[in-house]
Length: 419
Image 1 (cartoon, rainbow, N blue to C red):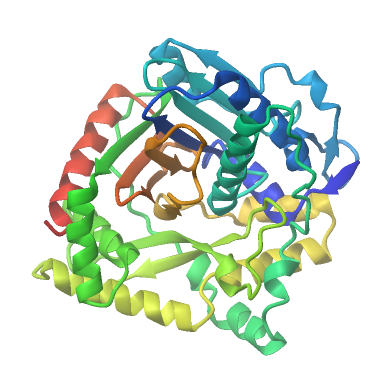
Image 2: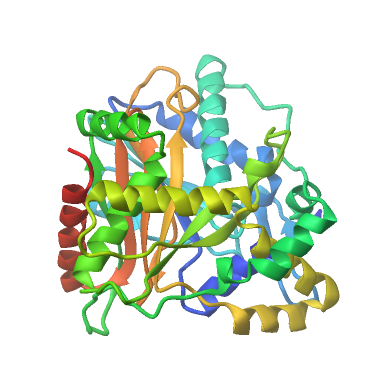
């Protein structure tokens, strides 16, 4: 069985070629007790059947690339277990291999309180559908706990193409987005996040948590001013960067953000794991005398304007045109040359739904999801939420000095956010 390699599958693959990131998604779930190890292993393995593309390999040597389904019995290490925390932490920054499969892998840390780490190939899906995978996994685990012989009678194998989004817009809206929103995904600021000059680097994921009490203060703030959590965090991010980069009022800083284009779907039923995210470039006028509220208002105004003009559509239209007109080799070459990977960006992964992420017989203390690991000089702030807590993350191939710089950045970000 073969499946088309969709446009964003190929673009994600190019991100590694252009040294932007390693196109992997990461999730860590910390439980309050021990999980059923055998049930977890069976659940992880069965998910390769539930979502067939996860058990496929990526093929590029016969013209247009495609996913090819293989016998999943060949995968003996889809999930590994360890009681060694160092080994577990090393796994969290590891990678899948799209050419040999599978397109996800997991590691279970067995201790008094177990932890589960899952790595997903970003070519298969974006962070939004990675969450859907986690919900499906927890539901399957819960069913198998009650009946170990349970086997799902459904598959998640629907349309993964950009047609799902493009079909939601009228031709005139597409023309307008193509003609007048070029700067929304093509503009790139020249500022770089300060990093060490060390050439020897290793992958790491640094996190900074805001627990419930602090989150509720921030929530009260954005509810009071009728803005969003994204507005608040983006405003704090701008203010920290203004100071760290010593940017004056005459300089131009732009921060690209990820946009989940599923916002445009009337039917949001999940029948496939895919990439349906785009990019928008945010920009606000900088005034060194602005208070935090002033910055938030500017961010909110900029975001509302973009949302009113089909935020993120421009990039999808351009990619669709390129891949429709040209063959795979030319399209790939054109996109590779045209990619302007942002030096500084942000992604709000959103909420991991506490009600949907439920494993029968064991509760979750905390969970977070984060994106790909960036290569220098690229820098991305990510955030995800779970059960009224926020986890900020920065993923980088960097040095110990870079870790210290990022820890300092987290402290500055924390100080900017409402307290």
